[in-house]
Every structure is written in C-alpha cells, then in structure tokens.
Image (cartoon, rainbow, N blue to C red; front, side, top):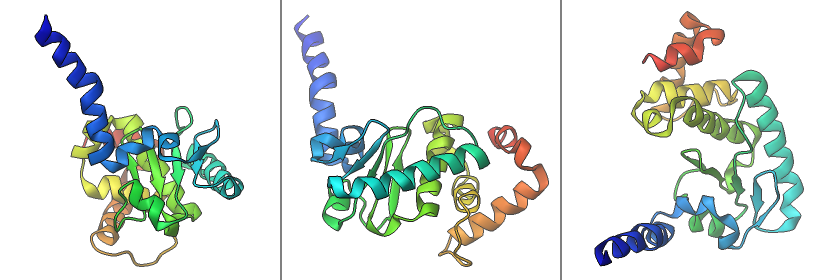
Length: 188
C-alpha cells in the first residue's frame, strides 16, 4: 500500500512539477501561474494593454482556420509573448512560435502576425484531427507544408526544409483537393 501511495504522489505531484520546470513549453497549460493575464476565450498576454491586439489576432485566425481549413474544437489557449523574457519563460528559444499538442500555443514577439497565428492554429487542428502522437509521426511535408500553405504565409521563399515541405504539400493537395484533404491525409 505504501508503494502505491508513493507512486501516486510521484505521478500526480512530482512529475507535473518537474515538467513545469524542465519542459518550459508545458507552461502553456497554466499561463496564469507564469504571471500572465488571460481572458476566458483562451488568450493570454503579459500585460492587459496587449489584450486587444492579441484578441483581434486570435479571433481573426480562428475565423480563418474555421472557414478555410477545418473547424477547431473549443477555444485553443494561445499565449502571446511580446518580450523575449516571456518567450524564454515558455522555452521558445530560436522559434517564433510553438504549439504544444492540443494543450496550447505560444506566440513569440516576432510572430504577432496573422499568418503565424493561423499557422499555429492549423497545427492545433492537426492535433485534434490526427491525434497528438500520430501527428508527430506523420511526414513533415504534410504537417509543416499544410501549415505554411493553408495559413497563406506570404513569404515567397522559406528557409529549408520548409520551402520544400510547402511545395510538396501543394503538389499533393493539387492531386487530392481540399475537400478530401483530411481523409487522404489520415491514410499517409
């Protein structure tokens, strides 16, 4: 019985605390604990003055993804970091943004642009449609190519390998069509 209690404490208390301190993107599950201000629709910011701009980006991106790519379930949590200190607190490093499964997304200072937010919401939708673990095993050209292409990223040339991923996804999408995209993608 004592072993079971110790195991339960380890799994329910120690493991989440360890994850909080070691795997920084996990902090997206409780951004208020990191000192952020959050509204009920899933938007979190460093200071209340940023809430209107972040909410507008969020609202527009959700409407875009719902209308163009697929309907999101619920209200995904998005942390909008306006400073590098905030981005570092969530472990962004050199990345502009990151989506952590279906737990939430962190948008760094340089990613406060509509196409970045749409890109990350597409990753969230992929997690919902494919499952988080399966999504991680799917080809990069599908996962990243879809996000870059369908977010309408305006950059003509992306860094490697993203440019090739987008081109391969666009070629594949041209063959299967948007109406069959999710069904065909599950077969990959």
